[in-house]
Image (cartoon, rainbow, N blue to C red; front, side, top):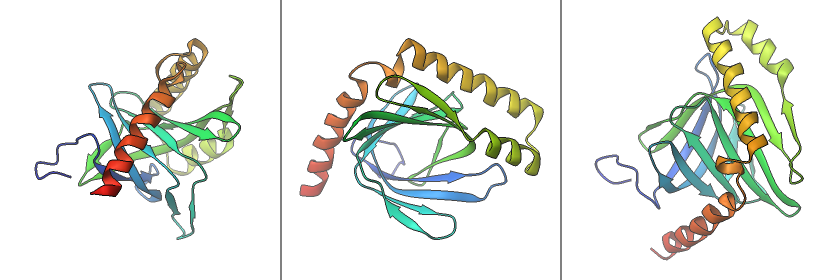
Length: 184
């Protein structure tokens, strides 16, 4: 990161995912900035280490392109797997960056999108459990449900990260930047 904490293409950030109660859920040790615009921060990573709250850690199996939104309560991960492009979408707060760390609060609900275009909403029971346990405000609950609906509409219309070729375009930028950082 440069001295003024301004994000630049090629910067290497980490990711911290929190729960509504402020507890750290998991971390990811790599997100290379591919683009930072008025709408979102786009990052890429390869086989990166994920560390869970209980200390367990594992490496992801594939490269991914991550779309963190400034004004939407979701983020989208395009996963380039052997069997095609999958998406894992988290219903979560808009991100913020604090000292080289992308931070957001995850609200359990997820949208899984498959290479054939089909999709499935995941973790409704976990969401309902945490909603009661952590006393999500009614306004937050309404925002999350509205944002899930908007995310599904984006998928149905194949816009944003779901548009043909978008993830691949940013993956190519990632490969170029990653190789450049390896040489430095």
